[in-house]
Length: 147
Image (tube, rainbow, N blue to C red; front, side, top):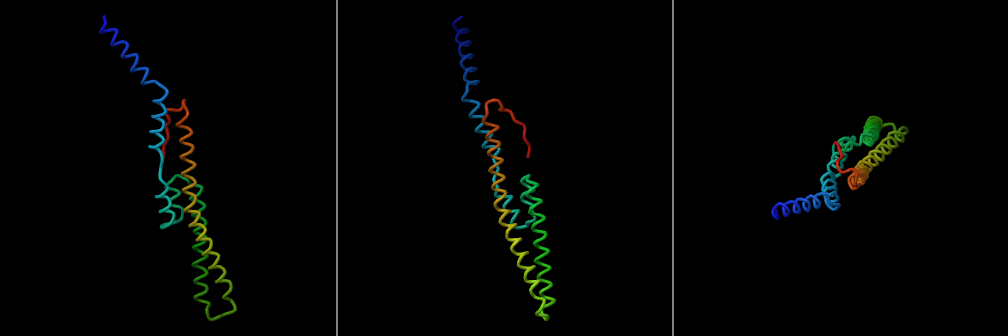
């Protein structure tokens, strides 16, 4: 009888510890740390191949579209201004337009590269904060999410 009583008390104690309030917080912290992603890969892909590929990989299609359109326009302006300057260098009266087109294209391209560095970091921080908020609430321990 004493052994049965001891096993019963031990089972109640272990089950009480398993469902205590500290355990879900540890589980939430583990899920938050596991779900965090680094913005390094999207930044690298936004810099070198460009055209918003890093933002598309991260799942931020709106920013990917903005970078794709911006860098496409900037590339057309750079190439068009450069070719126009190269083929019209004998006529000095019409050199202002190619230089202006090339300069605006270069500034737009540089701006898109800076935006391609900043935006994945901002998107990643916002995504991590929303996941932390979801995972640390007591009612939302089991969350289905995909990337």
